[in-house]
Length: 107
Image 1: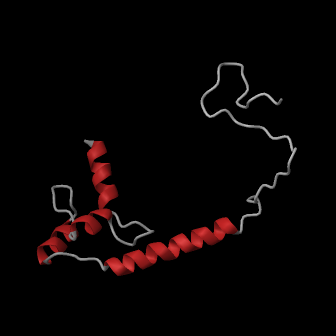
Image 2: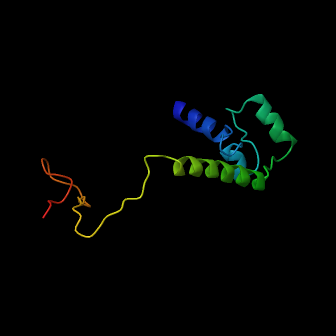
Image 3: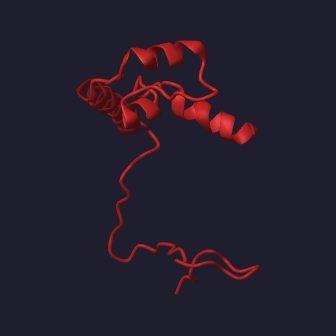
């Protein structure tokens, strides 16, 4: 069952954003089943692994802050300014028929 194995690997691999595997954050211990590598089984037998939630939150906030800085510094992001009487295109909120424009006609 390849899908189950890949899902297990995803949940038990430390993520770069958190530094900890999702399973460990959720359960407080490493997973222990037939797919587990030997070192995971040994670590589980020693006791519960409790990640420092405060450290994980700090790490996530730090990465989110860096991501926000990168976004804020993008040159392609600017605030649009419209004046009274300017012509604008208004996009239709729902789908369109084949051959029709995605925007309402200008009147």
